[in-house]
Length: 120
Image 1 (tube, one colour):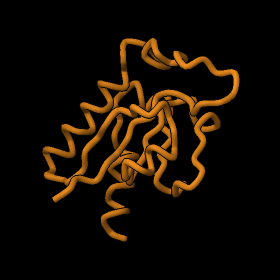
Image 2: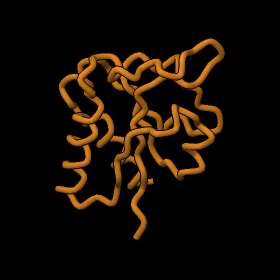
Image 3: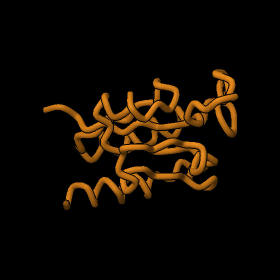
Image 4: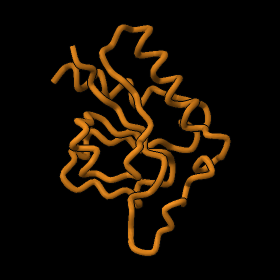
């Protein structure tokens, strides 16, 4: 069975004038906090035997590539609400984390949406 995919977005979408290395220092808080969040979420999903795979975005926030990669859910680091271009992706399946959710590895918003998707 193919796992459903969750992509963690930690950089803004490409726009004119944005440096390609923007966000390369680990995002908002440095120390590659996104890896810690991804690990916390994947550990929970594995423990509950849920068929979801969490991956770090490797497309530089390119929504067309994310759609091609069959992303079912996108989780955005704080500060990306107005810097992430979501054309063609269901906005209900994009979760924008608050700063506190992110720094404390609070996975509840993502788990809540996964439950909603499972019940649809």
